[in-house]
Length: 110
Image (cartoon, rainbow, N blue to C red; front, side):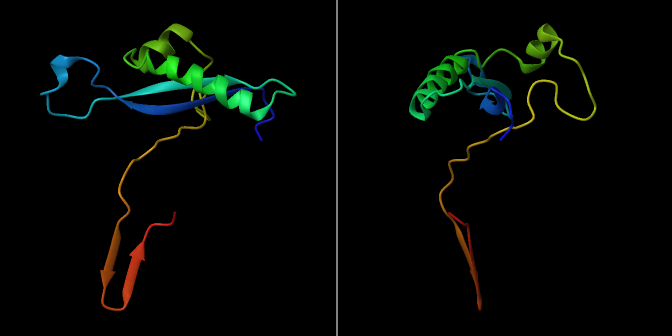
């Protein structure tokens, strides 16, 4: 859909990679950049497998501050879009919840 063979997305990662931070109160989040090259004619299963391998390797660098990555890459800046990626994906592993009042039931769409 992007018309590009270079797909780059961002994802938040927990920034508690150091044991010294285990007892520190606060939110430690970093942004990880995940990049995939899509080869013309490549089987989808091969693309998914290759992307999984690259993403797992990227998570090994999750402690590198995103700001440092942007500083080193020094991409062209624009106020119209993010310098590295335009899509960010976040996975929230939450239990399904429901909320009920008399005459009203609300639940998430799955």
